[in-house]
Image (spheres, rainbow, N blue to C red):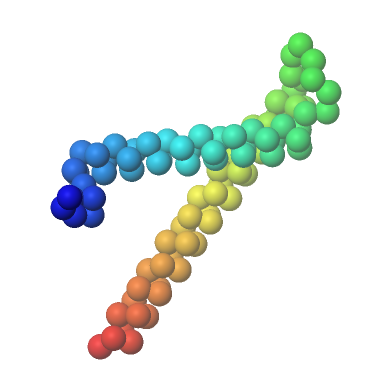
Length: 90
């Protein structure tokens, strides 16, 4: 058996990456739903009142804003570490 596992088919790698992204997105939606439900839903009923609806909208927007902020911060940290390690190796 040869070492083709290390150099897998590019289509397979792309498929795996897409599926991983889908899974991360589904986890994010699940987490957001859970957080906002606990925060906004006092008692389930046949319809959402306007206060609850506004709470859900605000909660989702803050969740998305916070997630985007964290991702941007992580990217900045990785870039600064990459620049730092590159300058250290010179």
